[in-house]
Image (cartoon, rainbow, N blue to C red; front, side, top):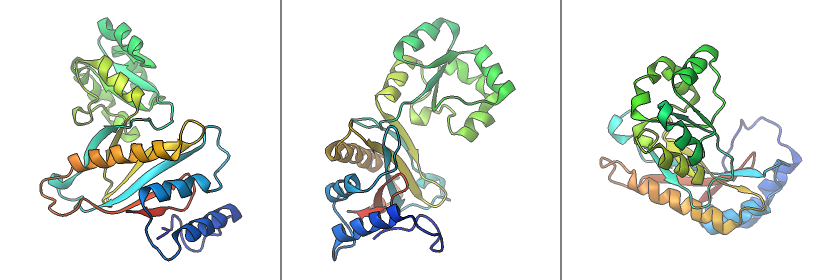
Length: 242
């Protein structure tokens, strides 16, 4: 099944319609493809001319009630091949740990002065944030700014801890945080369509994600966690997968 990503009345481009036709041809009489089949089809689609290639995403409708706190999904996974996206990491650490954080790969490092700068400007020029427990006591003043940007350090996602270097290295190695939205869906980047990825690497990344989802399954959910799964690339139609 090909999902609609915009309203039915919106005019589709020739490229989009051509991609729909390719997916329909691959589906034949089926409504669902295996993961390997679906990823192979994605690699054959006409992609946007992005410098680093179109992002591949995995989407799933989860068998949870997002209004119940004991059924929320919030976890992380280290994708074996990363997402293909360069991630800018900030580390909130005491002054004595700044050099260690830099050596581990942090792009921005700081303590009180960095917090004051963010508080004053409201600028978030990074993708991920990690924090030493000592610094977490000082982050409430910018918690709203970080939270709105989705980068507030959280122990549940492994971004708060004394071993800051290890947290930074994991993120740089391909760690991705994921959580359900208010409609019980998740959307996770799993690679790109470019020279650094082939279909096999994308499949391996998704399988790692599926394992992480299985481990994050709430005890109160007795049936299968994933109701429906889909893969797509930037601006492409999506393909339902087994």
